[in-house]
Image (cartoon, rainbow, N blue to C red; front, side, top):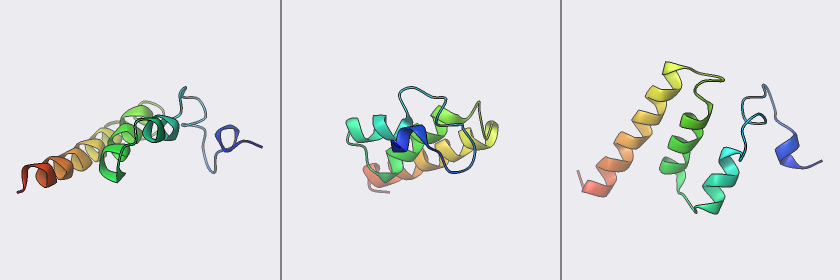
Length: 69
């Protein structure tokens, strides 16, 4: 079975097309920006505002690293 057709716990990624990990891989994103994509993609179906805050937190760290702060 394809990994895209199986999800461990929940279905918040299976219901998204394209799946976040496919987007992350296709765009060759790193850990931080990949997590931003993941949390933005799933916030309505899973974590609500908390997922938006997680995305924001990863984005803040990415900005910090890229600005040299």
